[in-house]
Every structure is written in structure tokens, then in C-alpha cells.
Amino acid sequence: MPLTPHPRTGPGPAHADRPGPDAPRRRTGSTRRRKAVALLASAVSVCLLAAGAPAEPLGVGDRLFPHLGNPGYDVASYDLSFHYSGSNSKPLTAVTTIDAWTTTELDRINLDFAHGEVRSVQVDGRPAAFTGAGEDLVVTPDEPLPRGSWTRITVRHTSDPVSAADRDGGWVRTADGLAMANQADVAHLVFPCNDHPSDKAMFTIRVTAPDGYTAVANGLPTDVDRVGRATTWTYRTQHPMATELAQVSIGRSTVLHREGPHGLPVRDVVPTKDRAALEPWLKKTPGQLAWMEKRVGIYPFETYGLLMAGADTGFELETQTLSLFEKDLFTEPAYPKWYVESIMVHELAHQWFGDSVSPRTWSDLWLNEGHATWYEALYAEEKAGRTLEARMKAAYGASDRWRAAGGPPAAPKPPKPGQKISIFRPNVYDGAALVLYALRQEIGRKSFESLERAWVQEHRDGTASTADFVRLASQISGRDLGGFLQGWLYGEKTPAMPGHPDWKAVAPAAAPVK
Image (cartoon, rainbow, N blue to C red; front, side, top):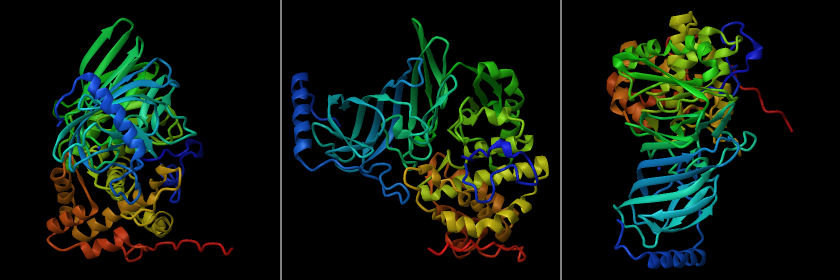
């Protein structure tokens, strides 16, 4: 997710037309009863919930997002159904069905859900009590769920578009409909979920919209049903996905199809009226896919494409199989061609780094953004002569300031209150790419390139941590790199750059005396 620089500054010297060094970058049933008994049990459980210990928000212990995610279960799949009325300011009616395994006995189930009206909840087909606690929806089934049981939770709710003034992300209003931008912690503004990347799951997404609209979601289409004056589109993923990577586009759109390497289906979603103007950019994707495959191995998913939305988000986003872009990135003449192409590669690289291999915790974000920035920079070097060494030298000069402001790459400072997107700071972009550059300098290009390929192969469709990366780097290089990487990943100050003893970091300015 690179933040989009404002184009009005215009291009200038190297990196002057990208964000400056200090700019923010842009989760068994029991014996069945008759319906009357089930309803009575539900009513009794509501009373017990009110009379017992108060419901409270839980979390999986993420250092940056303490109440994100929920313990006690592992989601296997989500089935999301949205009904769009034709107005992007009105709530969508929705049904979310979650299939999960319990990992401990549960008398309550916490789901992340914070923006919408919950109309009913069922657990294994029976009505369940529910209440809100912070940004959690707390569900009480009529009987506790044993550890190791398979359970289905069905929530009927509304899914409400959020004003940009209220919160970053969730449903994003576009010029002709809606799209999703759920990173880092706002998928639960759209649908109830276990909203943490450590609990990836399969997704089925259904969208019903009036005639004239087209809906596209992650994965591949499986069905299109036209009834009366509305159409329902169904999409399914073939690989597990983190909630923050879910994408649904609803708009007056055209879906364009082409072929990528090995016959990979590539589909792009664009405003119909802008189709011709955007085609010169869209046709670059197959070549960019081939470029990435040459460096890190075969593309990890069933399809890829770009969603070019008429929206002012301030960022681009690597939603799985369908990356979200602001349309203006491609139509604003102030953006140099090489810069736009490198940002396309940034989001494409995320399909390997961040999507296929997802962060175990949000402190591991540098593994996403550092790698995407790395391949963005390599592409700019190869295609536009913007040398990697020059970019890394500039990053080295700013690195101590970035660390002071945002923390070291693998231990970022918590987000500012009400600004969860503020974890996306320069320290996890160019600051993290600088870590990769130092590692390549230390172990050599051949070992580094072997590490990159092994990383995405070993952790494909899973999650991984900073410790996993250090362990694999040590294994491939044939020596313990824990000591070397400790300072680069966690140090308050930037270590000396191997091979470049002349590089200097500029000390952060002293805090003003009050």
C-alpha cells in the first residue's frame, strides 16, 4: 500500500516526484430442538448474558492492534452476500456466514464488527444472543461449543459505507459505486469477521446489484444470475485470504480480459467511459507478471488484475487478485510514466509478499512493504535508470529520522489514536527495503535471490514472521544472521552499511525545549 503523492508538486530530480523522506506513505452442533424451544433458549441466553459477566472486546495479542482478531476459533471460510440498492450512501443488506473450528471451549464467540446494524445471529442454525462490546460483536450460543467442534455462525446485518471523514477504509465511495479498502484493520466495518491476517480463510462473495451495474470480487466468477431488474454475481477464491485483502467493486464498469504468463487469466475492472484511455496501462500487466516471475517464481494465485476506481483514497492497495488503484494515478499527467509503472509493480509484488505470504502480526508489516518497495525500485532501475543504489543511499541518510519518528522497521510504533493507517510510515517502506539491501550486501546477490524464492515458496498460502525470515536467511546463507539483522530490524540507530562505509545517516532533530 504506497500512499499516493500529490501530483501538483510535479516531477523534479530523482525521487522528487515521489513522497519525500519524511512523508507518510501513503478470523457440533448439539441435539436439535423444536423451533419454539430454540427461541425460548435464545431469549434465556439474552437474559443470562445481561445478568452474567459483561461482554468485552478481545484480541489475539497483536502489539499494534490489541483488540484486533479473536481467540478460540480458526475460520475456515467466509460466505459474504451483499445487496446493493444503487445508492453508495445507503447501507447494503448483507448476510455473513462463517465456518470455523473451535480451538478451545467457547461459551461466547467474539467477532470483529463495528459498523452496521445486526438483525439476527444463528449458531449452527439456532438463534443466538448477541451484543456489542467496543468493536466486537459478542455472540452467545444456546449451548457452549466444545473444543475441536465445527461451527457455523450466520449474521444478518447491514454493511454501511463510511464517510472518509469518519474513518480510513472499509467501503470506499467511488464516482459510480463502491469498492473496498480494508487494510489494516477495517474489514470489520464491512462484515463480521476475525479481522487479523494470522487467520486466513477461503471466501465466497455474492453481490446483487440493479441493472447497469457490474460487481467483481476476489477470485474467479462461478455464477451470474439475472432475476428481474437485478443481477447476482458470485466469486470464489482458490487460495486462503486475509480479511484485510477482501475486495468488492460495484460500479458502472467494464471488465476487460487478457492472458498472462502460463495462460493466467488477467481481468481488469475500469469505469466504462474510461476504457480506451486506460488500456495503454492495462496491457502492461502481463509483462510485469513475467518480470516478477523471473525473480521470485510463479504467480501464486488463480487470477490477477487492476481495479481502477474513480475515488480519492490517497493510496493504492494490494487486495488479493484484484489490486485497487485510484484512476487518477493513470490519467494525471504530472505522474511520470516510470513512476506509475513502478507503483503497478509494487502492488503486483504484494501478491507474493503480503498476500500469499501474510504477516503473522502487524509488526511484521515490513516484510510486506519492504519487499514490495524493493521490487518497485528494481523495476524503476531496470526500466528507467533510477538506480537502486542511489535510492538506498538516500534512504540511509533519512533512516535515523524514520526510526525516531516511526520506530525501527520490525518494531514500528503503534498507530496514532483514530489514525490506524498511520502505521504505514517511511520506516516500513524504503526503511525496510534498506534492510533488504544491507542483507544482500552482506550475503551476496546469489544467496539473497535464493532466499527470496525460498521465502515465497516455503510460506505460500500461509503466514510468517520476522523470526521466520531471519531463520531462513541464516539457513540459506550458511551462517547465523541473527546478530547482523538485529540492529537493522530493531535498532534505534541505523547500522553501518556493508560495502558503503561512506554512507552517513542524518541525526534526527532535537526535540524543542518546552
